[in-house]
Length: 274
Image 1 (cartoon, rainbow, N blue to C red):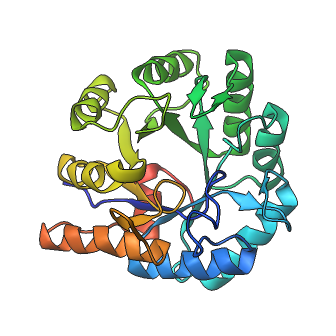
Image 2: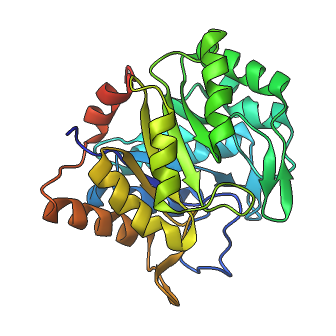
Image 3: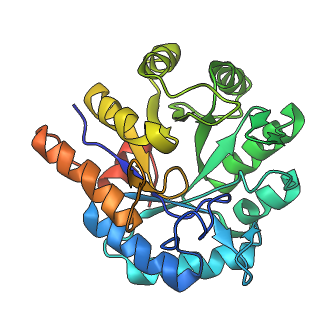
């Protein structure tokens, strides 16, 4: 079994300090948090950023400040995976701008529209195709965000059109209201629905984070944890930090005799030049 690639989604666009006071918002806070997550075993930092008022932002300048702070704080340097999902209602142009301007190693690519909690997350096929083209032009490795089986079919069509290169790296996001639920059978079904040449990981939302992470670990998938997806350590008990959630997965992997990939190993596994 390959080493496990562990991602820390440290901030998100929807999580607030009212939900967990330890949420990192400023570049300095995100850098310190990312460094602790890397020390605990994370190879990828999935990055949303906020503006000076703490609101979700797709401004390339806000991303640049956070990226520079994280790079300066982390040894070894993690893969910094930018989000192009933004917050519900962000325009496709604003979501794409950090990719065009900053050309990160990796970024998330949302391919399907859906209900998202109380909002509607729009990903028009025309905009998705345009975004995929810019990923290729910038040399950015996409992580395809999958909230339901139909998104896998959309990604396969983009591969046939030459807009996504193989191997495809899928992220199954399970448990979002409006998306597919966090049952283990859904994880198994979606894993079995992708091409064997492609890779996959899972992000369980809320109470689904830990059981899905453990199952994905034993199934050979990547794992994502962090305050973007879940702010709790146990039922009714807030997590103290993102690193606490990362370390729990690292400890479980060690007990199971599995090893976590370093950032450089993760780059090789994902086809990132570095």
